[in-house]
Amino acid sequence: MSAYLRQFVKHRKIERVVVCSVVPKKNRVVRAAAGKTKVLWLNSRLNLGVGIDYPQPRSIGADRLANAAAVAKLYGCPSIVVDFGTAVTFDIISKRRNYIGGVIAPGLEAMTNFLYQHTALLPKLSLTEPRRAIGKSTIAAMRSGAVFGYRGLVREIITRIKAERFPREKVHIVATGGYAQLIASKLREIDAVHPHLTLEGLRIVANLNS
Image (cartoon, rainbow, N blue to C red; front, side, top):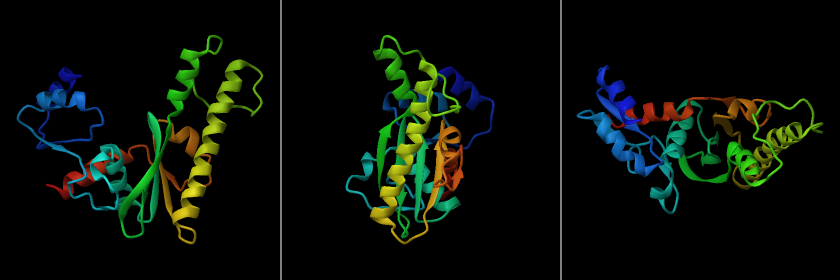
């Protein structure tokens, strides 16, 4: 990783590297790879284009802050970001453009890998759209449970967030992350799937703090 980053920075004219890190142990590698190039670490103390109405702002993951910055700028507020990463996270931005909290659920791949690693008879699974709800094989049954189950999870959490915070407001709901296209593209509750929303957030925050 260090060699790749070093080569990437070396052969390009880069004024600043913007980092959204949720793995502190890797920060030293990024610093070393950046060399003399300035590094901007995304955190709650920067100008994000949104406020933070949250008891412990420093505990919010940098990726979630990037998503909040991006969705507010690109789609407007109030808004909800559903990020299908290692965990499935829901981040809520109020009408007043404040990050107000979220929901964290186990990630889709983490769940299927757990079943594979801890259950002797269940195979490793590639995630694709199931043909039907009732599986005619172990893999088909697992795929149905994963894909349809996570759509149900996302739908229920969005319904509860809207009822609790936005009962009579139009809310922009945007999905991102590795499995956003598979899971969210067939959910009517999702307004848009934006695969690179987190990267857009990094760009937006970098420009706000240039």
